[in-house]
Length: 314
Ligand code: BYC
Image 1 (spheres, protein in one colour):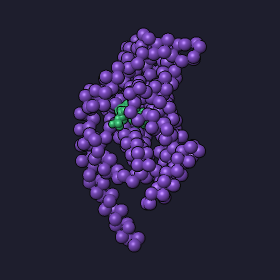
Image 2: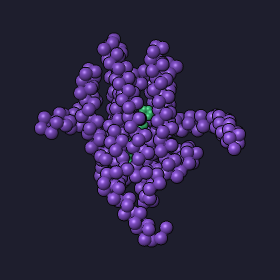
Image 3: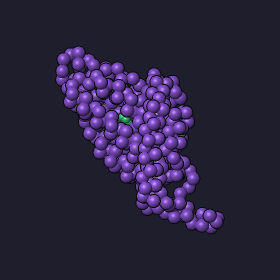
Image 4: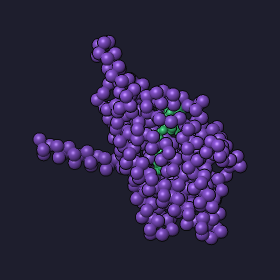
């Protein structure tokens, strides 16, 4: 592309962003915009498929057939979310196999939250309620992301997350209105998942390396701290309905602002988990790599079948 046509293409990109319209795969875009999207969408896709593990861990131990069927459907939905997201990333000119390779070799990240263990059945409720709840808060604004394929994938993902969040809430509601033992189990799950859920939103704005540029490009619509606040405001009243106590002595509702003040999570823990030092990092990655290797024959068979179909059609 000549200097002049490149400048024109970038003007057209900026005009699209300024008009709050969508950038589509064939539109010209700055390299940094493409790279940022590939990074974020790939991380998001990886989170969806690694996120199947903590809950998958309870499919065989769900307390009833109904709970088992619901949990299986939910975990399957997460695989579907991964699929939409890898497909969205591929519209940016990358190959899914390469993205998976980067996940497997630790060159791309996935959400910190999936490096914590699911110790009791109540954790499945807490994941649905808090983790999917945080995901909704983060992802609803992504439905208005400036990149069309990512924004459209998010619309469907958010509808499904909404069901996931309610199923988690319902599990905890059953436990928290149950026996004292069940109530204690629900409280313990909230105690352990509260802080990691707050960390899902990323580092505080002052230390967030990508936020400013991503917001200027309309990829992120709100900062990490804004979304964390929104999550706290939404979740604390729900904890009240459950009769559970959010494990934060600093939690105070401010009548004037209509927001809760709350204690920030320990971000050193977030950085450690992201670096690979969380309780389950090694296990999650090893399980993922093994599943990928065990599934090689399925990919080969599918590719051979597709090649045969193409040959026949030709
Ligand atoms: N974990 O500049 P920042 C789900 C990294 S799955 C790990 O603020 P950004 C579900 C960040 O990548 C939902 N890493 O970054 C599935 C960056 O490192 P790099 C997953 C984190 O991108 C199954 C550095 O820290 N959701 O719901 O502007 C079952 C500096 O951060 C984390 C998404 O992926 C973290 N928590 O903002 C149940 C949403 N936080 O890349 C449920 C899409 C930060 O420079 N992603 N980092 O090496 C986003 O919205 C944004 O990427 C983030 C971070 C808000 C997460």
